[in-house]
Length: 139
Image 1 (tube, helix red, strand yellow):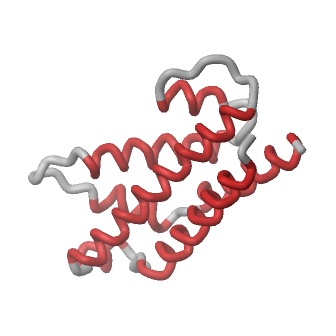
Image 2 (spheres, rainbow, N blue to C red):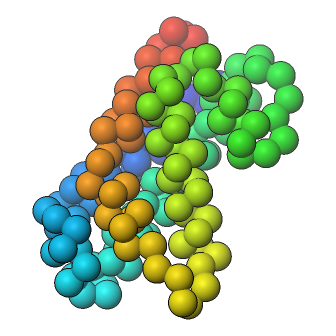
């Protein structure tokens, strides 16, 4: 397992999550009134966190004997017995939101989903903690 790379990615996730906490408005009503640059920054940080979580799972997967995984969904399934339901579901939901944001049509808006994910980041902290614990057990 490439612990150094995983730890770097986890550190980046933690930093991005912290930045999100500092820029996300305290209510959805405030979020709706936010400038487009604030919303774009929040969406971008959510995308970065999602991409880094996927990379962490891929790096951890390489170091563990978990069988074959062919897609993001099957990769997440391989970790269902190693990570909590909250951490895995949060990852899956952020991946779905990330994919909607990246492939969004101009007439579709994801403000509510983006605000909810940016406001509730407990599962991100849990993901970081559980991956760290899993790596420590592998030592």
